[in-house]
Length: 123
Image 1 (cartoon, one colour):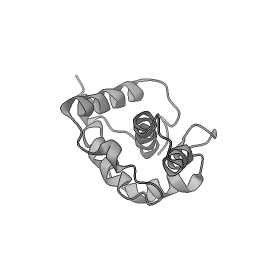
Image 2: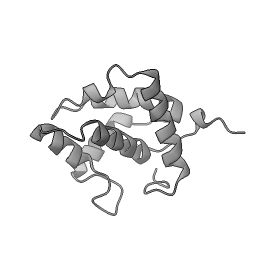
Image 3: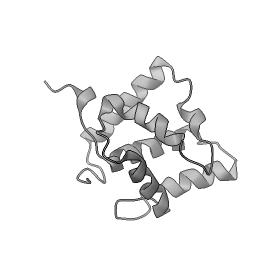
């Protein structure tokens, strides 16, 4: 049996999972900067691999570099990445996570990775 925590994911998959997390966390946001930041990150606007504002995904890829991403380390990478976003402070979405939140992140990763999804073959 494969340990799901060590299952690898690509950059686009992690970017998409961060987008999902932020979109859910700020679902009722009224701050224009937050709304713009999350909208710019939307990975589903275009058919290709990227984001609504291409710079958002390019910046993310530069941050990731050659890091190996697994379900187990993805949350820590996500936390570090959101600290680099200058336009709007989205770090609260990843601050003070409970054990339940961490399990929800891992479960979301596993569910997403096990389904057919855009970017599954991206590198």
